[in-house]
Structures are given as structure tokens and as C-alpha cells.
Image (cartoon, rainbow, N blue to C red; front, side, top):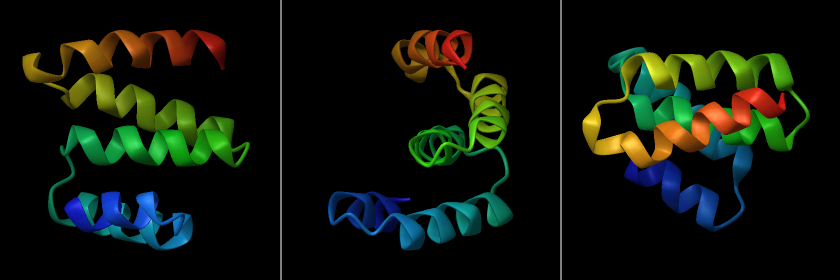
Length: 79
């Protein structure tokens, strides 16, 4: 996950997305990976994918990510 965040900081969106998908292949319930894939999808105009990853984020995010959960709900409502 850390590598994907570094890729995002450098603007390497395709590489970040590939890394995040790899994280999900190994650990499908990694909420943060779903969050960042949703953000990437939305920025590319891929709203169905963004919606899917936001829903999966909400299904997998624990209490530590409660602040992000509210943002995810707001983003879902805007799609």
C-alpha cells in the first residue's frame, strides 16, 4: 500500500492503480486500497468503478477509518 501512495504522490496513477489491484489480490478486504482505487476511478470518469470501490470500502473499513467512511458516503451520494 505504501508503494501505491508514493506512486500517487509522484503522479504515477497507472502504476498506483496496478499496485492497489495487487494489494487487493493478496488481501481483498484492504479498505484503503478500495478507497484509493475509488478516487482514481472517479478522477478518470469511471463512475461505476468508483461506486463499486466505495461500496467495498464501506463494507471493509473498520472503526479506525470512520472519518473516511463519512466521506465515502458523501462521494457515493454525488455519483
